[in-house]
Length: 373
Image (spheres, rainbow, N blue to C red):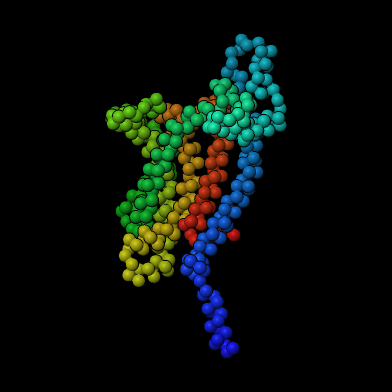
C-alpha cells in the first residue's frame, strides 16, 4: 500500500464515529467525565486532609479555654458548702482531667449529637439516652440552644452579606472600567470608610443618627417579632436596616476593592484587545469575557468572607441586641461556659474549612484551565 493509502486508512480509523454519538460530542463527554472524576477525587482528598486539621483546631481551642482564667462555679452563691460545690463541679464534668474530657467532647460532638439528629428526623433510637453536650449556664443541650439562636443570626448575617456583595460587584466593575473617574474616587472613599471604621463605632453612630436624632428606625432588634402581614413586614425591615448596613459596609469595602483590582488586571490583557478588534460590543467584552476571568480571585474573597461576617456579627448583635449566636457567645465567655464556647468556635472553624474547599472547587468551574489531577 502506498504512503497516501496508509495515511488515508489511519485518518479513517481515527474519524470512525461512535454509534449514536457524534465524534466531537463523544470527546467532549469523555473530557467532562474525566474532569468530574478528578474533581470528585480532589474533593474527597481535601475532606480527608481536613479531618486532622479540624482535630488540631479543636485541641487548640480546648486547651486555650482550659488554660484561660475563670471558673464556671464563680457565679454560684458563696453560701454553698464546699462539699456541695465539689459535687456540682463533678456533675458538670470538671472533676476529670483534660485528657479525658477532650475525647469525651469529641465523641459527643461527632457521634452522639448526629445520632440525636437522626433520631429526631427518622424516629430511630441510635443515641439511646447518651450524654449530650450540656451548657454550664443553662443546663440544656448546647445544640438545642444554638438551633434556637441560629435563625436570627442567619437572617441578619445572610441578608447583610447578600446586600454587601450585590452592591460591591457593580461598584468594582464600574470603578475599574472608569478608572480615576468621580465614581471611582467615590467608591474608593466608601471602601476606605468600610475598612477603617469598626462595627462598634458605625453601629453606635447609626443609632445616634437614625434612632435618637431622627427617630426613623428602632435601636433594638426585636427577635420575638413575627411577620404576619404587610405592616409587620415593614416593621421587620425597619429593625433590620441598621444591623444589615453595618455588616454590609465591611463586605462592600472588601469585595469591591478586589473586584476593581481584578478587573483592571484583565482589562489590559491581549484577549480584550483581540475581542474589541473583532468588533464585539463593550458590554460583551466587559461582562462576558473580562468579568468571568476577573471573578476567579473574587470568588475566594466572597467564600472566605462568610465566616468573617459571622465574627463581625458578634459585635453587631451586641450593639443592636440581636438574640443570635454572637450574643450567645459573649454571654458564654462571660460565664466561662466552656462547652458552649467550644462548640460555637469549632462550628466556625468547620465553616472556614468548608468555604476554602468550596472556593477551590469554584475555581475549576469558572476557569476550565484549572485541573484537579
